Length: 382
Image 1 (tube, rainbow, N blue to C red):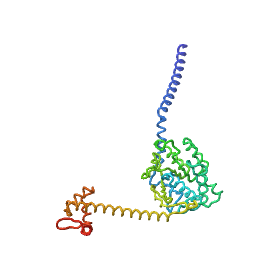
Image 2 (image 1 turned 180 degrees about the vertical axis):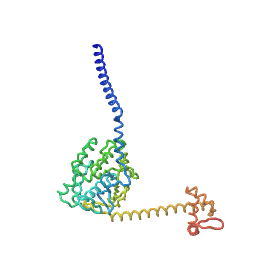
Image 3 (image 1 turned 180 degrees about the horizontal axis):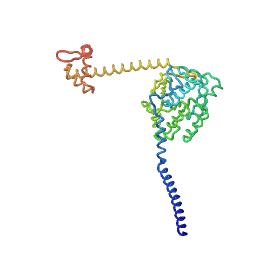
Image 4 (image 1 turned 90 degrees about the vertical axis):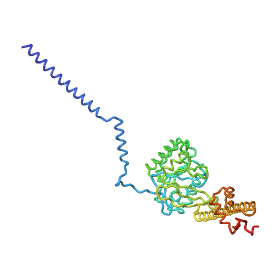
């Protein structure tokens, strides 16, 4: 009986231990199974990225706010908020002067043909090229153009000379100022100083991207000033920086300065309606005023002058051909066949047979005459 009792007790203990082991095994299996079924870090990151991308989709029922322009000319808006823009020209061709007019218009309702499309906007102007004395002159000119009080100007225009700043800190400094000022419009007069080289494609793309993000984050129109290439016939903005800015900019304005000092502003590139051209200039006392009529007269004078030059060139060219034709006839005994004269003139002038044939026809009865024997010099020239 004892043996049987202890044997049964051992069996019960063994069965209890086995149950515990089985439970532990099941728990381990469950943990392992859950771990295996958990997405990896890469899969989680991919899913989150896809969710972000999917949120950018524009559908047929997507509601998009219309662009809010900060300025307009003749009812056509330019420099939209939440976007980056460009202002280009050759060196010393009036870019800063154009920014003065735009800033003055933003300070008040309208300056000349440039009209503000915002109510009491704040303007942040960063000048990386000029010394403080020249920057102070900008403030004085804007005050004169806008007619606002000192208090109003100081509350709405924030102008900083950053010529001494290094390109390594300029972007970060810009962020600090934007966060402090909260501008609706930011003017970067000298964006080339934000990179070590305007021909560095990587740095250029990174800078323009950062400025675009800054514009969107703060609902700000950012206008970047950049010189054109030095060649007179190349109006592209300089380097890779200019290429990227032109690609991303919503609007690009261009300044031309005439020999008479008239600064004309046009809009060669725009994603939407192009701003009408307008012109300004300084008077003898150094004050800015509208120059649209002066520019129109200047263009008309240039057009007439060009037409006169073309006419003089045409007359000169015709006389040279007549002289060659007369010489060829006289060298041939004062009479030459039309075919032979045509061949000689084609060789001498380096033009087509059609051009020579038209010339000969045009001169018959004037300097040349057609006889039974051939072409001769008109009697009044002999």
